[in-house]
Image (cartoon, helix red, strand yellow):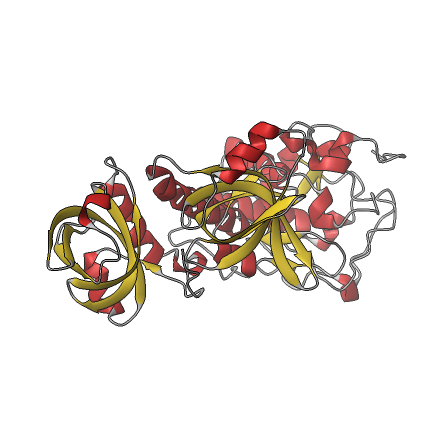
Length: 110
Length: 296
């Protein structure tokens, strides 16, 4: 596995994508479908997100996938690292953590 | 009150929450004030969940080797993150742990006799998430972690959980700092606690935490909407810190404090005193009804 540079990635749900266009974020998606090398999935807070340049094959993914990458737009991410997060994952909690990490407690994350 | 050999568990380890504050007199010269004074529960020699960002912004005092986060001494820590650059040697396994708030080097010494452990460590590969328990160290100016446990994450709710826990502990520690006047962090200008507590002490103006005075200075980290409990704690603490009261050998009686705390019930005052004792700001003197500030 190649060594990525130590750029921090901000915890984000879809609502935060707008704020972080061009920045590296991390989020967890519930996998929907694959099409043309893109992954379509649901963000922790609900909206549909498209992930481009997915580095792995479709069959390799579990139901939930953590995606770390650069935000391209309100609903688009360019993938750098994708990590399987299994078939069971609490999206609601994760979404709340995203809010906290970008709100009152940002100082311990960024 | 004095421990001659330092074998008093309380002053050596902070008691792990089991040794009451009374056994830690201020006059144990070998310890920094913040390290010796007891905190009430799990925070002092317990386990701190942290982000790597917190590790890199942890502070150090000139007088000791300890790290401090949010005013708390950092002993054992736990982190969750992704493994990068794993290197296996005969004596140890090391890797970079990246939790995406930052990266830190982690080293796990290998016990050559423990073959189970070797197998487990083989399973740690680049790109997987792990939970580590360890100790924060500094070597040649760079911080690193010596881990005593490295475990792959199986249920990824644990990743979410770790962040929640780190947020919780961070908020809790900030609140304890904000709940009483003055910073928990002692001044780094070599505060001297050498004089025996028995003599009447006049506070030495050159050796004082800048924020302690008769005036209440709200700490920067004051949580929004502080309630009457915090208010009571602050004012009780202020009372104990008044120079006139610091000069009294046996400190103040609980009833005396309650008398002066107009607008608060005796129970509230007693609760505040208990809180301050647990946080190490005051200690009991001749009996359980007399208390004195540790700022003396």
